[in-house]
Length: 84
Image 1: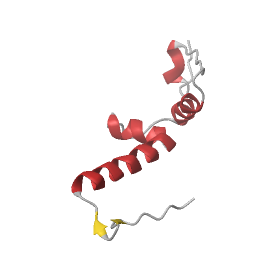
Image 2: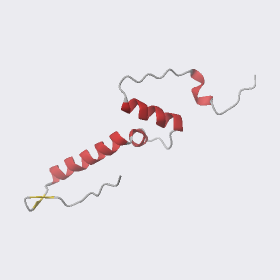
Image 3: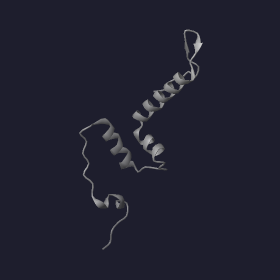
Image 4: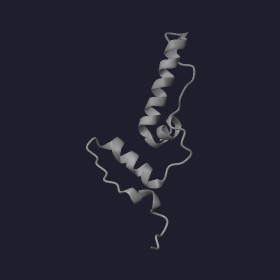
């Protein structure tokens, strides 16, 4: 879904003042971050990349308030085989 955003919105023929433009931009970013929670985490915490299971967990947490995830200590070493 592509949303077209007009930069110069008018109210009764006058340009929006600085405060209203700030609020409109803030609303636009908040709605974007709510839809893309993984991008918010990457921007806010300055992460370069999240693993696919982290993206999935963030998405599930944003969709359901009652989401529970039981993790183990070895969650980060899933890709490396262990030969003990």
